[in-house]
Amino acid sequence: CSVCGETSGSALGHSWTNADCTTPKTCANCGETTGSALGHSWEEDTDVCSVCGEPMKQLRILFFGNSYSQYAAYTMYDLVKKLDYDRLVIANYVKGSTTQSVYWDWISGNEGISTRSYQELIKNPDGSLEEKKAEHLSAETGLTAYDWDYIVLQSYAPESANSISQNQKLNHVVEYVKSKATNPNMQLVYPINWSSNRDISMYSLGNDYREVWKRVLDSY
Image 1 (cartoon, rainbow, N blue to C red):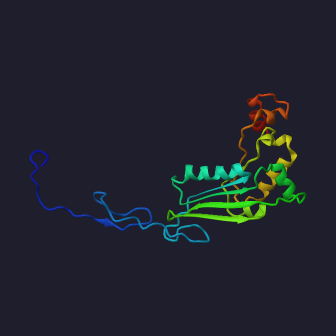
Image 2: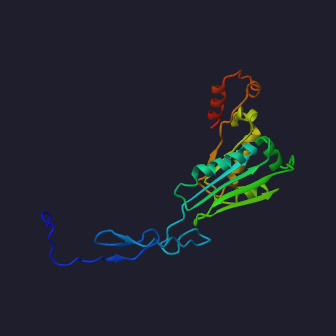
Image 3: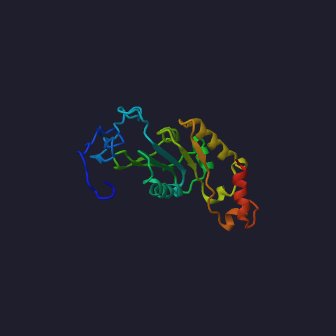
């Protein structure tokens, strides 16, 4: 009774539905839960749960550039590691102080790069962190290691002051990366780096940083 609190009869008792991949054992009458969700059972080859058929939620980002990309990869990992992804892969393919123009010379066989490093930061579905490293890895191997969702082409400051449309070698790198990407929905990113006064004066821009940014944006 809502007035005096008197009761009549017996409680119905819970009517439990079994736990599944994402939901613990739950009462159909009152919504009370007990225990924990079972968790997904991921198929290694397909990244699909063998129990419920749900695909794994993943975020895969590759930084392709110089030492700045290495630092950016760590920063990016810290920014996104707590987002709702089952697996997170942040990788960098770097050569210190290297421009995308030099990358094209190497890709096309005109010039070698003595030291190239590849590193992966991986958050697995169980929450564990892996860190993998390799040296002297080919560009194609890095670009096809995963179905990258984003590939970030980063260059050092002087080249960033010049747009893709004005830099034919950089344009070649863009086309090469697109041709090797295994994810048809991959998004290509070209960040606008800082540029010193000396850097932008190389392109007769004075000290007008807005013109630097406009050139890069217009190149798309």
